[in-house]
Image (cartoon, rainbow over all chains, first blue to last red; front, top):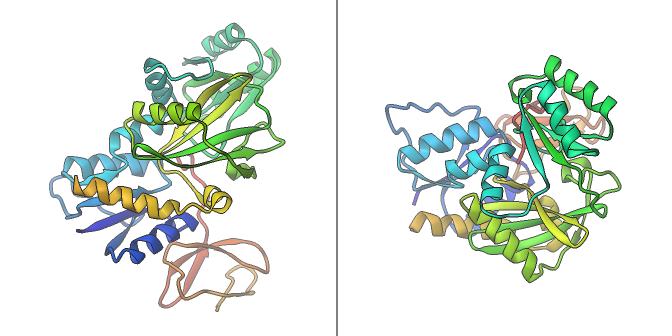
Length: 279
Length: 54
């Protein structure tokens, strides 16, 4: 069994995964995405499985596609990375599979974006379709703010800001729910709490253990399955009496989950990856 | 032990430190990347890029 881990940097999560592999006497290579050279014409790796922990969506997606085309199994596979790395694709897939999400629209010009925002009514949230950690996400409360933001995005934005992903703002109760799905099981879940409307861990949210209900379990597993399954963090908002999936992360950070729940997430991830390798 | 490339403060480098690990200088707080283990070589931690995330 030849096992590889695609990494950008070694964070808490990757160290835990290395430890879990060592504890199971599994030999592995660390594949640094800033050093790797892939020759499309020649499979220059011979891995049975590669676990993706790159923090770059571009590198993840391109490497996973090449690995998969070479016949190398990956966790997650490139299709899952493609869907989950792009909020527009995620939304389209989830909505088509009947997964409840906040009302969401996409537009491609400042004029049409403003029209969509007005139709949705304030407050709305504008997000880059590709991006994470709450970066460049804006809550827009009125027409004046919308006009300014849309103009800024158009003028200053790069390719990733060439579309306007517009979502109805959900007045959640100061928290969201992060559910970690591994294969067909729920590994663990937490509330992420913040006084700020953004509840990303990278924005300083604190955590509290969350006891998974059958409703959340069913929703999370369905959402994970809809995007192709694997190791996935499903983020869920509470909107009064219903739950809405907000996004799904395909290379989830789990420091906060681990520290809050004590669950051996890295071990579960490695065991799941080994199962995939043996299939 | 290594010297911070910014403030020259002392940074403890544990034995299990990995290449590519991001560490923080306890004296000035800057984040640094361990780009080499033997010998220890530190570089400024990379700046967050647009497609980074989880």
